[in-house]
Length: 257
Image 1: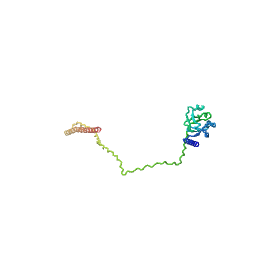
Image 2: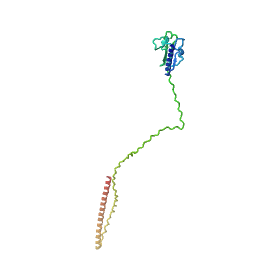
Image 3: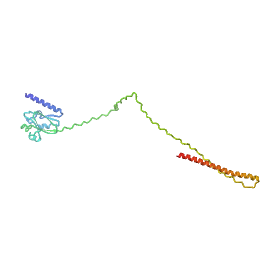
């Protein structure tokens, strides 16, 4: 019966050890093959100094629960083997304790005389180191010629059976501009001024014969009538020039306005 119970305890201990190991931390058996005991004067301090405990690791205490226990105490109580006011107490005979933070952990056996005989251990736990930096592998240069990137071909455009004609832009016709033609200028050539008519000098009086005197009198009448006709012709020409000048002035004023 006792043998079956011992086997059962061993199986449970192995199960707990496997479960703790599956979490990623190391599992240490306190005292190795000796276990947690006061017999043989085992130096647990030297045992702990040879280990490298980190956050996430666990320790297993195996002992005969009729004679031993595991009590976690403060540093002062560890030095004096005082089990009063403990942090935790274990009595199963196969106890597992996981370190969840860095620091010093102190364990003793509260059975009379056991701590004084050396059944106590001081375990120092270090913080978990940062994971190593992974340097990315250098990319090898591409061989020449470089591969062309894949460009997906555009989707085909469905043609319409009866595409609507594009709208025609209608430009409104501009209104015709009525241009009034300017009247042609009439070039008026001024008439030359009439040359002054110099009257013929009257013939010197003489004492002709009667016939000669009569013809001379007719000549004098003709000579008097010639300047009068020339004067009337000059006045008529001047009046014509005046009329032409007024007509030209009126045409110029019409274009200017």
